[in-house]
Structures are given as C-alpha cells and as structure tokens.
Length: 400
Image 1 (cartoon, rainbow, N blue to C red):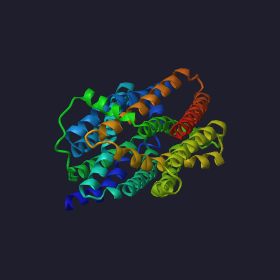
Image 2 (cartoon, rainbow, N blue to C red):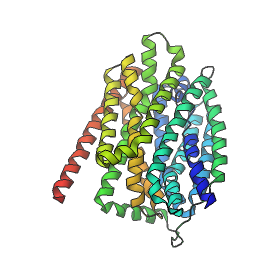
Image 3 (cartoon, helix red, strand yellow):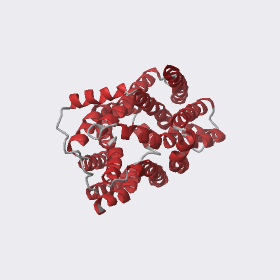
Image 4 (spheres, rainbow, N blue to C red):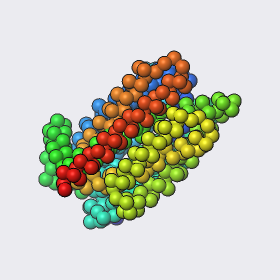
C-alpha cells in the first residue's frame, strides 16, 4: 500500500516533468532556421503520422505488459529524441528525431491516465480519481509553463539550449518512472493480438454516450493543435511590426509561460466546474473557446489579440479531467490504454491529414499562408461544433 501511495505522490511530478517541453517556445523557429516552411510542416505531419502508427501498439503493450514498463519506455524514447535534436542539421535527422519524440508521446498516451485510475482502484479509492486527474493536469500546465520560460532563455544564444534542458529533464523523468509501482492487474486477462484488442475496443462504441465522448475527443485533438502549431509565427509576425524580431524566442517563452499559468488554474478548477454545469456544457464550452482563439489569430495581429490568445490552452485544461473522468472508468482495465490510444490515434491522424492539406495549399508567402490556415481551422471548428451540438439535441429527442 505504501508503494502504491508513492505512485500518487510521484505522479503529479511525473506529469509535470513529462510536459516540461523546454523546446516548445522555439521548436518552430528552430526548425524554420534550418529548413523551409514546407519542410517544417512536413516534419509536423511526420510526427503526427508516427504517433498514429505507434499509438495503438503502445496501448496494446500497456494493457498486456503493464503501465510501469510502458511509462519507462516512453521516457527512454524522449531521451533519445532530445539527444538527436541536439545534433540535427538535416531534414532526415529532424525526421528521425520526430519519430522518437512521437514514440515517447504515444507510449505515454492513455497509459498515464490508466496508471493513475488503477492506482486509486488498487487503493480502493476510485472516487479520488477525478480530483487527482485535475491536480495532475495542473502540474501538466505548470511544468510546461516553467519549462517555457527556461527554454526560451536557454534558446537566446542558441536554439539547441532548449533541447539540452529537455534532455536533462528526460533523464530525470526516467528515474521517476523507475520508482513507480505497477498497480494490480486483472489476473484473468489473457494475451490477445493487437487486431483482436482493437475490435474489442471498437465494440465498446455501441454505448452511444461513449461514442459521443470519443468523437468529441478526436475533434478537440484536431482543433486544439491548430493554435498550438502557429502561435510562434504569429508572435514573430507581431514582433516584426515593432521591429523586435531578435527577441521573438523570449516573447514566445513569456507568452507560453503565462498561457500555462492560466491553464493550470483552469485545470485545477475543471472538476468543480463540471460538477456545477455538467460534463456536456463543460466540454462544449472548451470547444467554443478554442474556435474563438483561432478566429482572433486569423483576424487580428495586435498586442490585445496576443493577450487574448493567452487563453489558447484553457480549452484543453477545461476539458481533459472531465473527459477522462467520463471515459476511463467506463472502459474495462484490460482494454483501457488501447481504447484511449485509439482516441488519440484518430485525433492525431485527423490533424496530420489536416496539416498535410494545409501544407499543400500553402502559398509562397509565409504569414499569408499561416493566417489562411488559421481561418480554415476556424471554419473546421465551427462545422464540428455544430455537428456535435446537433447530435446532442438529436439524442435527447430520441430518448424522449
């Protein structure tokens, strides 16, 4: 029991450190300093396609061989990725680095949530899970925020400084995962093939509520990533207007840190908000806010608009804990990581396709292309929002 409680003590720190992306404020600028815009967008597509390919096998691995081993593997992949980024100069090396980064993200995806839920269940305290998930999300955003300012400062002399810090963080993360204790697994579970596991998970979608929540998760992965992908060139364009391009890395790091501080506050309150207004209203409010972020970035390049976009991570902060609390307990433990990985797979695949289409449609002028993509993302978000809202009313009418 003491070792399981140690899981609960270490887990928020694991989440915070895993998401301590010191490279986040400058990765687009770093890539673009070595490669053309089209190649940078291709690298993003390579990352998301790699996650898609690795996502379900990693969830299957977690369900079959344990959460702890999977999280150790995730940490190891991150260390390799950051080491490669330190020495990357060619498109090919960047591409390989992106694949290892994708492996780290994929092996963590779904397994982290399953690890926390199953630890609370092993302690016979499953009712504590939603608030612990919200606390973990708070650490998630605080970790990203703190890493943002440190990574931005480290990148001022050389963008690679941010990746050196990331490597140190990755090694520390690996040491934390080694100290984890595997939650008790279902002894009745049998080893099954990946395809059989996928089909078993897909049959769970006969539950209409679980189907709607899964479609929402996929939709939000797509629209959450669009402002994330383009906020650095957005701030660079703003800095250009004030002849301050040289301090863009510092501006992006400060902006990221403030963004994450706001998001951490919302994440800590997300379960309380859900308890007051309900899961559906909470989730749709998150979607509406993200659409507003894309609209602001598309129509306005100004200091007030940049301040408004500090809210761009609040949709994910608001939705994640309520969504996980609604989905994870509804899925059997022997399928949980695979099911959550499937959600992530379809979301990332959707974004990879979206980004690929955007990159093919991009023109020669960098900022004009980016602002056009933000506009397309806004319309994509509005169409998806309308469809999700329509299905809620349709389902309620059918139930009545």
